[in-house]
Image 1 (cartoon, rainbow, N blue to C red):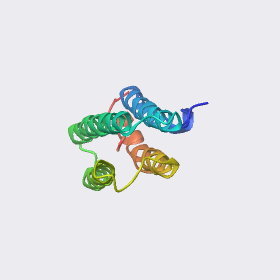
Image 2: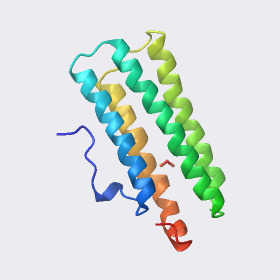
Image 3: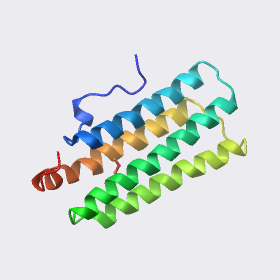
Image 4: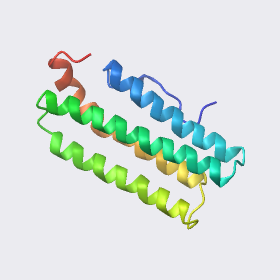
Length: 135
Ligand code: FEO
């Protein structure tokens, strides 16, 4: 069973965003699996690097969508993206400096990091964007 199970409660009801969120969920699951299988630091560093790169891609796409449609809470959402990006980049820096290992605690952090943001913040824009015809 996957570490994070995708289900409808994670859906924001906008297909392109759900697809990107599913990919992020898949990447955190890959990291958990790599860790569980005892893969070396090189493999974990590579998964973490890919996760950060795709997070940036996703956040940029979401921000563009919110800006294009004049979402009123854009600034607060963008601030949260910037904070989340910093958190995961700090994690990467600590991991690369061998100050931390990728552990179940790290996986739990990433899971909460993504799931709480989707359910707490992303879901707030869904009715607004859907009202603008975004599907
Ligand atoms: Fe889907 Fe605001 O990140």
